[in-house]
Image (cartoon, helix red, strand yellow):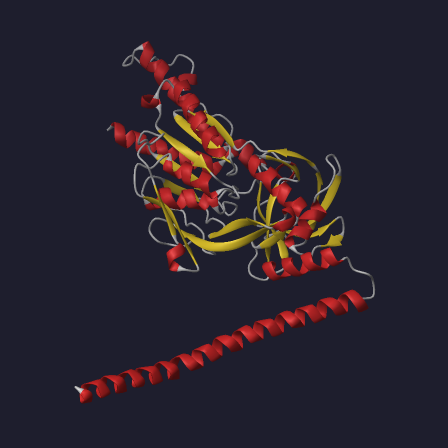
Length: 443
């Protein structure tokens, strides 16, 4: 028994020695890391005090601290930043759907201010700003080296005042100036129309009004067409939609899905991930859907496009989307300010992250740039003569008057579609796809 006890004790002592040998270096590493952090904080304090005491001009302490905080956050990625109390109020106004400015969503890329997308029916949209434009100067002052918030602040101003921004655009040989009159931006988050038997839903952003306005528009347009049986499909137009609230993107996706995953988010720790699934109910009643996207479609609009594409619920056409696949959490701070921090990446139902890659359309359809009409084009667009125009031509005796009227009505719809193709080639393409699917379904 004594031998057994001694052996057990020896094993215990060996275990203690082994644990000490392993844990000792780990604790030393942790202590060294903590000590290094404190040294860095002491260094920050030294620099802060030297700036306050020796900088060529007196600096406000509050401004200096805010700049340090913002610098720390903006060094992480283009979407993390500090929001002063004033900026936090402006952000809350924007998510509710009304704010002042030019009407563009911007980000920062390698120190330059880049347009994510112009917002529909805003001064920037009417001035011809495009997704992918780089803004280099505001009223002759360079934006290079400024934080994104500072650059945005330079573009703000009184309603009715003029601003001149210098733009660098791919395909243009030289930078050019764009004059814009600032205005109060009242977002029309959802616009709807009918093109023949197709319901077109234009979603310009994702704020608190997006899902309820969209559901209301679907009901209104379906009733106008005489019921769902008379609808051949839906076009969800999210071109130049810069995104917005994640919960609204989930609701819009859920509106057309009966089941399955909509989106998942994965943060730094695997246990912090989240997954959202669809609930039963399809506002489109199973009708075909075409989603329109382009390089200005970002964030929440990419979530919707990716979810409907992965579930084979919609055909996605247009051009590659922007590729913002990260989630920002706004965290309130003392003093009524806030911190916008990137806390996760989001993934489509198939498990793909669109961060920096974007959503690739099922069918790539570029929007042709308008070009001046030539004399040859004018000649080609002249109406051609047919047999029916010839004097004395005989009539068609194989059709009733009602059938002839139906043919003429269908022809008018086709001509209207051709006119739309001149104004918006991508939308016309989407409607043509739905017509084709409807024709196959009838057969």
